[in-house]
Image (tube, rainbow, N blue to C red; front, side, top):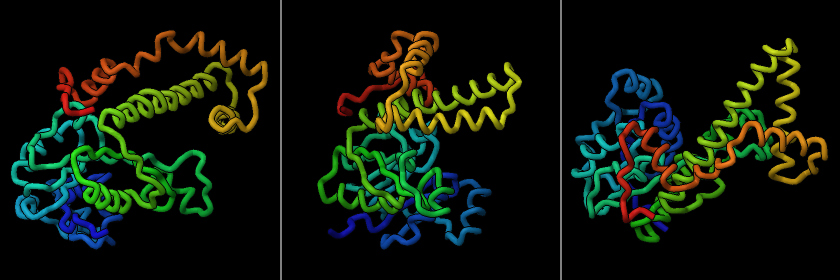
Length: 290
């Protein structure tokens, strides 16, 4: 199937994510316009051998506009660009928060999509030094992508999937879902829960070293090995936890978790965390977003 996105604008091409994605799109068959306003970021792009384009000059001919800019400015940026896009074009954001909160400028003739990398799995079988070094994904280690595209045709979705796989490659699968479902994955599942647990474990490590006087290297060795075991047993059932370990797990749940912790999956709580992330008073829930 032919790629219908022949002209693509990368807005924010000089930022951290923009630079990663731009590097992957260099081999695309589409015409890529790398757009960036910040002078320092423009210089980074030139050092990487990329020509800086003016979004104002290319916006009207682009079939796909990728907004690789911070969530808190997505609304303002979309207000500037969406009215000038050609009818039938697609806006692609990299996080679901702004789309879920209905902050993007709306126009009937424009399609809206979100695509966020899952990052390489902790269970990924890595075979090279390059794969081991690629913790983030997008260069050597394979990852999946979670994406939402609720208005376009099957042909547009297929073409968009091709672009997404180039952006975040190597990619094994693109998981399609609604914007709301994607918002429950990030932030609720992976940031509110997983990233919080990660930072909590670091705090527990620091507290262990400070309170007991055990060498940090020894504490790290014990923790890092048991992180792998805990994940393998909990998610892959490689071996059962011992009876004594189960007692310690229950003690930890009683003393660390709140009984009502699952309320974070209620939509009102999702609204709260996204509003806080976007630094807005409240989410403007779009009745068309499911």
